[in-house]
Image (cartoon, rainbow, N blue to C red; front, side, top):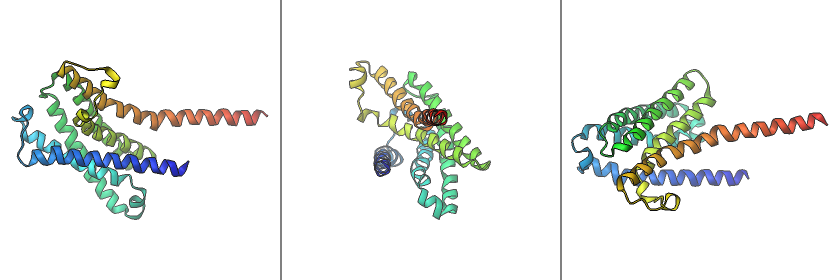
Length: 216
């Protein structure tokens, strides 16, 4: 079972890093080398710093979760953590600005909420480690990175059509809105289930089992 869990972790990180690299090549590199979307043509500064900040957080995050690097190179882990925090804050703050001018008006709320969550979860991760609560620090880092990666999931949502869930959506604006909300918040909900719901249920199960043993 432990071996299977390790394989699942490796497979998950491979997919995440692969999608992040694809997003970086198809969006960040293209934008920074001259391409300008009509949607953000008047706001290259905010889009640029959002992409730079998001890239810092996106690619420093997976290294932060490596137990081997964390244990053997603690100073490097701390330095990379500071880079991650700066990148996440820059990405979150610029996303707040972009949420106010998004060409998809119904999507502005989801982008704004996601930006706030990035900032809050990153701040909580920093606050937890400052107060020596490493367990909470790790959990909030997971939440923060899920929020950061959700930006990528939203941008790549066209590669994963949701027709099999909701049927064909003919209105392009409504279709984009559905994609924005789905890929913004479903990863966060799944993360909370893994981080809090399942451990809580396991704890209840263990208490019930111990209670049965004690009553014999």
